[in-house]
Image 1: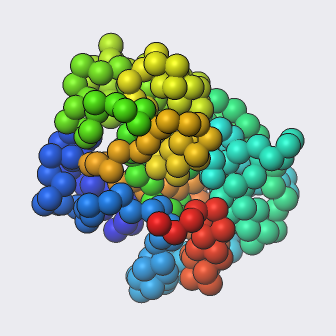
Image 2 (image 1 turned 90 degrees about the horizontal axis):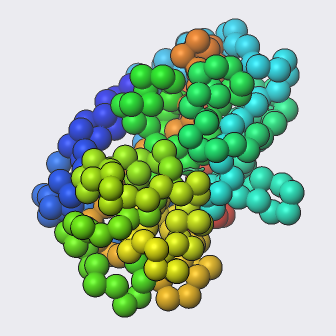
Image 3 (image 1 turned 60 degrees about the vertical axis):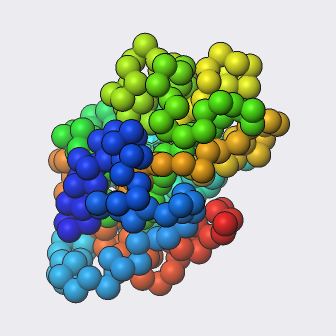
Length: 289
Ligand code: ARG
């Protein structure tokens, strides 16, 4: 629970890109570095937290849980978010797909991945269409009103993509610019709050937002760092600003009515973090800086 509280505090302190950015030299909750850190660190320290270990070992991990379809872990995702989830031919692959497979294995379930709009994931978890939402999804206070989150398995960073010759050099230059985002993401929320909805254009996915940056319909795109790296690699003439950012925790969303599953997933996650499996998956997809 400590981690969750830290996340909430970090969220409160970094409620806006601008507020966070202007304080980059004196970080309150999250250590700022001059360069945005690669999102490579599995939160291994959690595995060593004694109270949480006790909780996992003695908890309901071995206890009851139900799934939408018996014997199956149904995962809702939005496969437009490399390297967390993307299509390889007809298959959805990536960090989240691999982590979900390991979680399903631990729980003795088969995995079924369902692709949907990002904005549909939380509702699908809430209404019991899927068991978990796993989509590079940030733990936020707003989402916590509707779903539970497992412990975090990775860190995300909101970054800004611009054209190479852009006059936007930092988050301080975003005022009055047209910002592209993926609809329903934390980037969407931050930018709407800070720069006004009229200055934000929400697209169905990050790739479309980036296409609109290339064609000049928007001045920049605010999105998570790892997909940003993929999109910049796939398009000529773009760069990611080495500037202020918001640090976030990714976790799986689970229904508030399924505490048994939440506990089982957390116990499995704890083991997978402790034995290095999660880090191995992150390292496979995320190149060290
Ligand atoms: N981390 C951001 C959020 O939770 C973006 C996640 C987008 N994920 C996706 N699979 N499209 O809002």
